[in-house]
Image 1 (tube, helix red, strand yellow):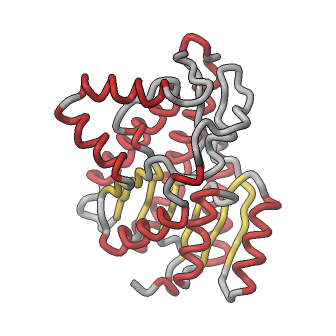
Image 2 (spheres, one colour; image 1 turned 60 degrees about the vertical axis):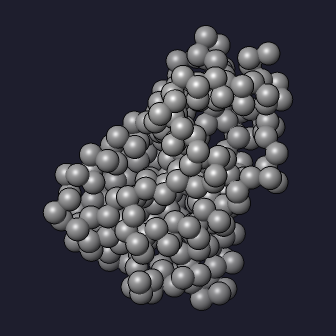
Image 3 (cartoon, helix red, strand yellow; image 1 turned 90 degrees about the horizontal axis):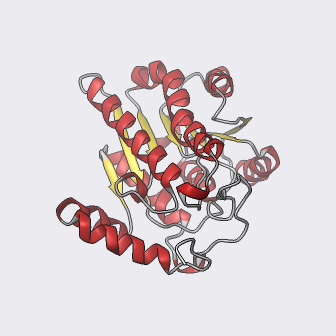
Length: 270
């Protein structure tokens, strides 16, 4: 693939996997449009990338707001004139049992993770069809197996994957590439800012981030999957085994998932 001809939008680009995506696409030669709420962080990334000769655009956007998503697409077209790849990466998580969770917390997760994907994809779709491009959704193993104390997060990822699969089939004859990426546990700040039952940030991650897959690995694997125009990309051995075993032994996997989550520090199951 000649990446120098491509224009890529990455949402949630200010940190973690989104930042790694922006850096990987830029390194490959593509023009990168970064979207997130943290404008200062994105400006730092843009400065570093432009020093290496990359073409970048920063758009401050909250993907849970439809108007922000429309403006994101419009500004991309104003500057670069086309859209080849849309990476729906922006997302938030949670850690709380349903019994202890306020309803607005679950709504917030759906607004960002699911509706953010819908809004961005809807406005970018005509231009992606014109370029016979790719639309990605960064989902999770939680989109295949419901995770306890993450009911809103799992619901949003299940919904995201259903939306993307329907989109793929609708456009089967139109050359649109639809990719669902499920990284498994990846080192990022998503657990630090995960919402507690009252909507406040969790603050400290319950997992050893250093032992997880790194965002750069996710980005590198994703670029290869785009070139091959794969439908799904499931990463980490744990993630692949969870998806596979859940197909044949769902009750066994219920217990395995429960036991794994119960071992986390400050687990709500204790």
